[in-house]
Image 1 (tube, rainbow, N blue to C red):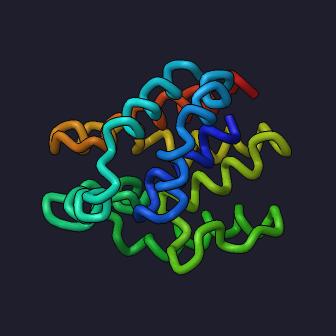
Image 2 (image 1 turned 30 degrees about the vertical axis):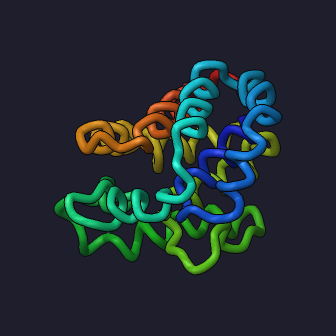
Length: 178
């Protein structure tokens, strides 16, 4: 599951050379992802095959940063109506990173940024399955379905990896595959 989580972190980050490399090497990555979770791998592969790299950055901005946007920050879902608690949640999530002696997994972002959370989960998945399960259950599972629905409503290509992410997070939160 570690490679799937890392792949999803790259996909949900602003398009970069890592995403370009993933698209170019998708046939190499396919069997590795399939070995972790076949359904999630199929959705990720469909995304990588359909993604137009020349337009990826503008599509990313349109869906994640322009109204009506689908936020990739956990606090926007977990704290609806409780915005005064954002600081507390940020510190709580960051404490998980620090407990494993990890720096912020994705530089220049706040702890509730989805790719940072996926980087953390990928790092602890093999090392501490119980911690991975608790983290997924508390900080990801409650809102990933809502993100996937938002992306689907907006007819975004990113709805494919969001569906894959929901499957993976549900599996980890249930303790399957650990």
